[in-house]
Amino acid sequence: MTLSFKMKFDTKGIKDLQQLEKKLQPVVAKHALAIQAEAAKNAPVDTGALKNSIIAEKSEKTDSNWVISDGVEYGVYQELGHGIGVQYDSGGGVVFASSFAGAKHFLGNACEKQADKFFDDVKKVIDESGNK
Image 1 (cartoon, rainbow, N blue to C red):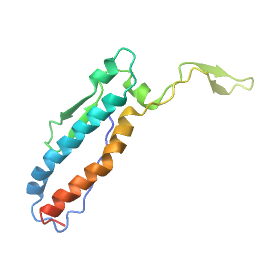
Image 2 (image 1 turned 90 degrees about the vertical axis):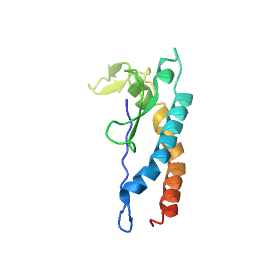
Image 3 (image 1 turned 135 degrees about the vertical axis):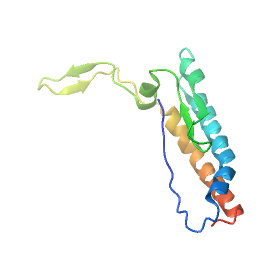
Image 4 (image 1 turned 45 degrees about the vertical axis):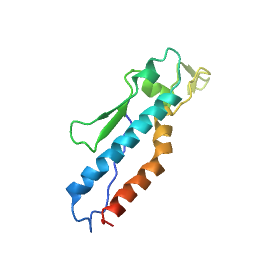
């Protein structure tokens, strides 16, 4: 499972976009690794496979694009929750069994926890570059 988000910036007034991107690369890397560590820390553990499979890696497209993912097929169900069984009520409506497993949000919460720090660091780099 991979959780992704994109950011758009108003580039008016930015003098050298390529230079700014180079300055932002270590910021993106720092926060991607922090999200990976936080997600692993908060991942539910039975065998440890999910926790140990969470990785952050640079995209092949650009050094400013990182992907944080897990390497187990059930990671998405731990993140978002799932219903193990389905029962039907007398009217034919679907009622989820009591064995419904709630969402853990280990990756989403890690992203949320890091977001303000990330945006503060991005703003700091932009401000220090004279690109406001």
